[in-house]
Length: 293
Image (cartoon, rainbow, N blue to C red; front, side):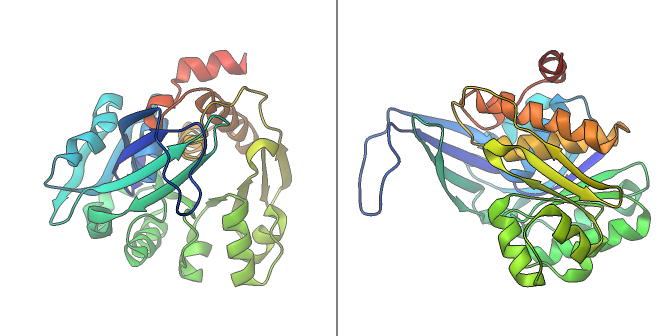
């Protein structure tokens, strides 16, 4: 089982020819409203890859709530630990351009009112993989990580965005997934190198650094793994990182070894880049299997 504690957003996606510069107003070619949020995206990615997924988070009592929950419902995610909050549902404004690049602004809203106690101890045993990110209140995430550690769950932390988290919580995780910018922020804090090997040496946990079009690298006690990027025609990179994390969690939860799990996650993320949208771009297990050949 996978338990995701994280954000649930409604995404306002503006399809542009070019991304706006500071002070510039451009007309979008199209507007789409989709479900999003790092937590929800990763939950949907894992569920589409065949995992049993429980989502814990918060939404507001507003018209955006159902938009934020629609993808989770469609993927069959258990929403019994999602609670209503006295705040607006989280919302992201996403501009994408013809080259597949994006600019994103996020208003967390109700996500900051999600509480770690929504995940009971019974869900945090050795058979559970816990996925957490940094779009909810940091102290709640820290407490959940430490409680999950005491109950024997596997813990996968996506340190995105790269906000401060207690060193004790970082070291209590099993796997840490970061991109290049997040790695640089963490390395600056730890006084280490930015590569996966240096961060693994500093923290003592498995570190996976995603490198965009260059693939990914991972470091654990067995050494370094390098994963080349899958060659695809990029249409939209929005949600690709969440796809990677969700499918990685699903693969590890099934007992797949790290190197093979990374390959599966990288293939899924590449597939998501060939489609527009956030959760709508996330591939199914059958699509990933076909791409892996």
